[in-house]
Length: 312
Image (cartoon, rainbow, N blue to C red; front, side):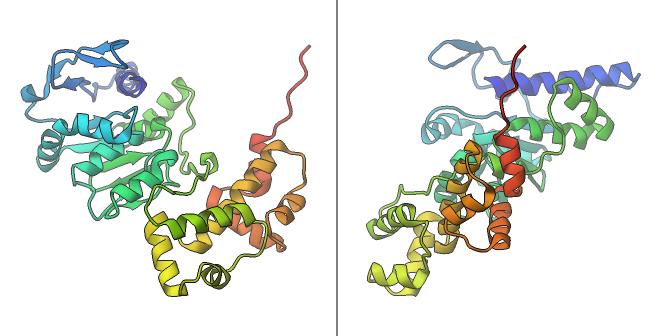
């Protein structure tokens, strides 16, 4: 609901700024649906589309809003839009999927062999369902061949589209109006790692649990393979297939997730946190932390552990 309303407001406000500059409006904003009224959130809200998809034969840009609830059910419910979306794309329309709306865009097949992002919380599910699409979950916006997807904040993609169609100057004005930062490129620092365990490989699931319980120790692939009585080559193949991560990546992400939580509390120094999660080399810890979160340990601590200001 919010992504629909916000999308509409962004492009209407862009038109307003264009009028103030004495320039013609760029966007004709229309809400398109399958029926004359759509019930949302068990009837709490209702939307009345401006027109039906059957009445719109040609458009330039389609925005797929974010979906709510169970992602499988939401995709299945909205799959009836897919033939219209794919036909419009073939006719030259661009398609932008906001947040988990990327699942519907992926379902259409238009992203096959390409790249996408989505809300970081659903990235593992996306990888499991659509292995033929490269999930770039650290990115706020991914654009390719007239197809766009956004990370956890759809505002970044909306502003990106304003800049694409109306130019940098308008994008800056719109971002200031809605009090949203422009040019945010990375959502990694917001992500909370939760290893994908919704698979059928019991041995790999047991390995994941073991890593999460013993991440403070120095864990190697060879030692884990020996512990679970499996060849290294088979172990690495099965782990990657089940979790969409390599074993080394998984260990690193578990360690860094623990470090993030400690830095948020701010009760330990960065070096103390580093040693606690099993790193002895400052540069190695900093490099892995930045690779996973997009920022340094110090910057992460400063962002999420600001002391409360005393009130007068």
